[in-house]
Image (tube, rainbow, N blue to C red; front, side, top):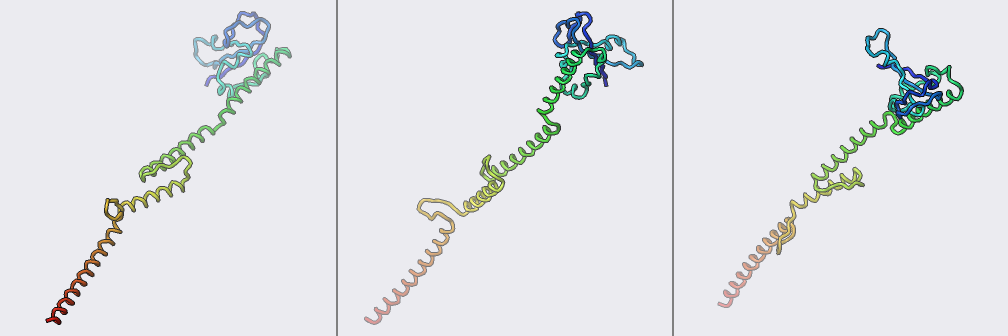
Length: 217
């Protein structure tokens, strides 16, 4: 992990350029810098370049890194190297700079509270899976749930469709015939009974006719 050292001092010459906005930093105004801390035992060819501060205007210091990095590495104003040599006005300006970066980090964190984003995503996925499952079940039964349907509504619709399908098995509509299979069965039974009664009456009539003929003879 790379460690950094933070600097604060009055600009010495006015020749140094700000790494944030690329403009020159005027002489005698506050400038703040960041340098890399290199271990004494480390074998590097550019040690001097790494350890040399990269200077910024106080209002441009936040451009050095993004909010997440600052939230973990921002030092207090009095922890900047050179704090003791600053006059009161420069100390106030440095305090203001640090507070500004703290506020920037705080607003970024408040937009996405820790742990909330993942929980909501997980909840959305679970909710979507449940909705998709209900929709599939309803479509397989021949109906589609509305967005406002509750779980009980979906179950009720599914039962109704199942009942309708059972009725369809015993129902048909044909011109000139009974509309249901059960009615057609009853009609055939009645017809057989009527035919039987007709046959009985016919036999009685024939018997009576024979009796009359016999009496007349």
